[in-house]
Length: 261
Image (cartoon, rainbow, N blue to C red; front, top):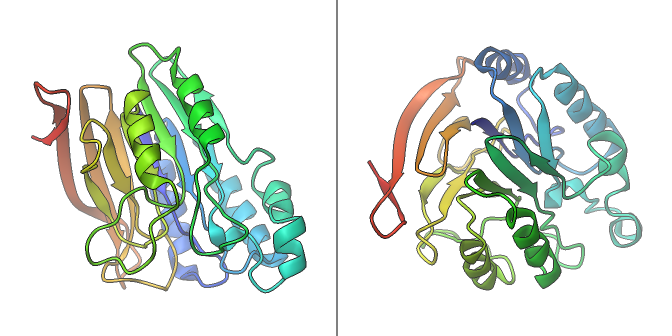
């Protein structure tokens, strides 16, 4: 299955000149699915959500979306606590945790947004059980989780790791998750999880934001089954053209862990 992974579009603090090249590239690549791992907007304002909605409408492939912390109002405390996802549901998708089943894969979206701690995410025991239930009948199909906050941080990341991340990783590994797609940090990561090497950690950079953190605007294209995953990272610099930046291939080793081929 070919999954194009976008994240952190941040309409309201985006690069407008990149939008049409991104749409064109996504549609030209024609993946089976576009997975968007949150932060469609910068401040969850209606106008920003309308921009995100219009962007999604231009994409030809089907989409699976989850919210990010920027998709709940930071500067409207009343809305953030009482109706945090009202605008997201109206403009992006009514479901916060959608699941898609195909002949090749089971992809489940997870809402990690924590309205009580805006920057730091959370993953509840109930959600982990729902993921395990979704994968219980997957058989030999690829098993993919899509969420906003990463489940593991590198040593150079200053932000606090999501609450319950370690336990969640162990549980996802036991449930047979093959890949976890996340965003949030505006950097690309492609490697097995240290805690659960049988699960691949794929983090997308920012697709459109001008808040860059050491790399240009990027997205990932995965060509995957349960035994082999090829990841192409596309990047756009000042010339506003998305081109392949690099490719990495992972295969299962004898211990069933992912290893770079």
